[in-house]
Image 1: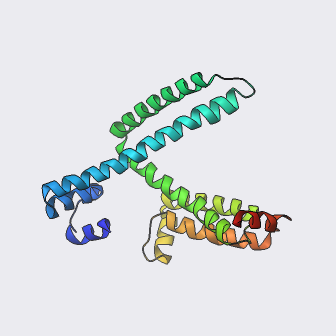
Image 2 (image 1 turned 90 degrees about the vertical axis):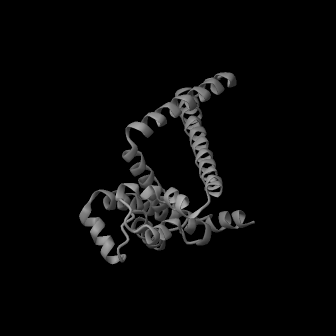
Image 3 (image 1 turned 90 degrees about the horizontal axis):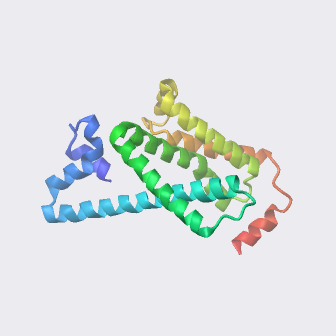
Length: 208
């Protein structure tokens, strides 16, 4: 909503400043005190997401890679794992700070690409798995691959981007065509592949 309103109120904003539309609108439309409250809310959301991502990254490095892969079958003391987790958080935070200053445009592109990839790969699979009993393993797999490939092609190949922009009325964000094609492929492949013999039993157990 902020983005749509900003296009109307500040139509001549420079392309490189479009991500600052919230702050520009806030300084023009609100009292400084109220705008300060809004900025604090934004920073709180950013900090909440940042610390969650740091914890997830540290958990992946220490629990999934070090503990379950490198140290498989070994008894690793809990205190050692906690220490490595804390060191991983510090290391990831340092890398993030360096990237934030040294590769600002790359970071922004990676965020957009990551959200597009997540939405196109897992969105249709998750929705169909929850709400359609005809979903099969092969359908989910083919749909996820299709969504990822579509996002990559739309974001990197201009001809593909122009094609989807034409048929989707100007939409160029790669998550939209990726989601639609992934949904179509998941449904199509699920219709022509066989569900597991115990699929109904498993779904009944989940619904209960």
